[in-house]
Length: 375
Image 1: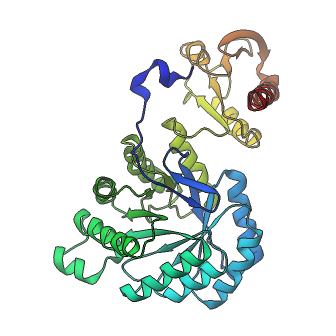
Image 2 (image 1 turned 120 degrees about the horizontal axis):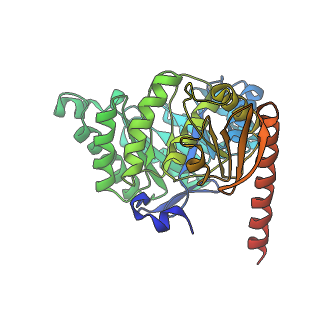
Image 3 (image 1 turned 180 degrees about the vertical axis):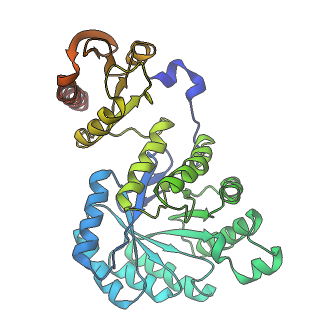
């Protein structure tokens, strides 16, 4: 029994929507919320791009997006798609022909921007290519590139303009009997993005791609994304997310998972619960957590670990985690397993011992899941 079953106030009821696919990855419906990022290498650098995609996939990326700004990039995309461990979304701006070429190159999804892809005739050609090659489409509305007629109508980027832009493009796809699409209405302003997403969520049953665009650097962008995406996810809105950071794309994947893990929407790897430390700490909490995060990166099995400096909150936190360590006195602390006091160990041996206990627990969980899957 999960905590959600016994504590209903923890439940998030996701918005009901249609399900589509990006390659083999289901988006929407009852599928897990997919995490994605975007490469920042030159697309023509096939080796470098594939290496970056692989690092993101190792961090948990379900999908990766690759920009296709020109013909050489479209040609390179074919090889990237062939070597990628995850489905590729082709990012298309301005040149509708790049969308056609990307579909031909094997992209699993085409991201097109209504504000700059061209007139309806050109969009229809992209739709035809998507149909012919089994691509889905993401309608990517962005506050910074709204259509001219909408800016003239509303005077400035606003939620109503963004929703109208998205619905106009949905109409074009549906009029052409194309329904394998998702939609995003991104803005760098958290309030504008949140209002636009709430509006589009009410207006369509299409899956929704969440993002706060151009959020900023690693720290500022993480905070802005956590606030914007976190509130929308809490309301049940969002079927796939991308955290946009001026940082290594791997960090986008890590932050995305941390946001989902904090809301109980995805579980991957070790969730470390740790105190900020104070004069009561029985060991160096900050350095210990830093080392453990690095030493436990290889664990993909969802599990929890509490690292608390003293006995004020340590035993209580350990009750709720798979493995725990609470600082004590005389250079020793208490190890907890499955919420129960197990044994004492010295601070000097603590890190290696905790890694060993986490790996052992992960193996037990994996073995149990294998047995259940076989039954």
